[in-house]
Length: 80
Length: 80
DNA sequence: CTCTATTTGTACGTATGTATG
DNA sequence: TCATACATACGTACAAATAGA
Image (cartoon, rainbow over all chains, first blue to last red; front, side):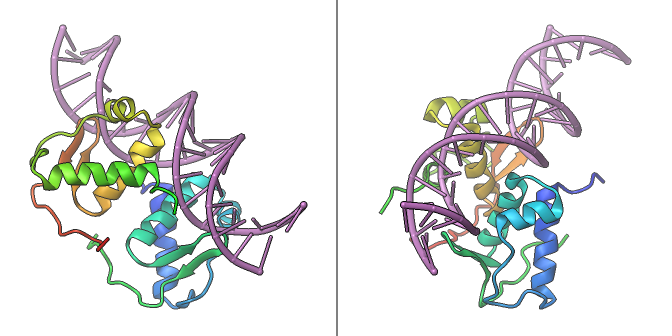
């Protein structure tokens, strides 16, 4: 099967860090620019990953401040 | 407060057309290019709207063919 | 089978708006 | 006022899959 899209990989990576507790509820994620640099991807990829995690309830973006791990974590959406 | 983002408006619009039955399950949505033209927006806006509807289970995109209304419609995700 | 057109999907870049500190 | 950071939006290019000639 074809490798997942970069944005999906990044979203998986971040979700795993949340589920493992490495990123705790209430904690601030690295900024868009940081993730962009660290993973060598474009803003589009970062935004897409963050957007997915937001829609699934893993994180919450606060305009002008940062993206934070949700206080109440959701159940995983898919069974892949 | 500022009007909703264009992509959110478009997503709402399409979801309403699905819920009303105007777009029936299995039916093909207008192409990205069509929606782009009809609503006078960019591809980004259309893609974002479609992506949201996909993640929420309203539609399913088939590579190279089109975007189709899901056979089994989900419950609304939000309570706005 | 090949070629082409259509369409979705991924990805990059950039500009601007909005909110916070 | 200024810097930082998320959010929206435009444009563009190319890959991948499908369908039709």
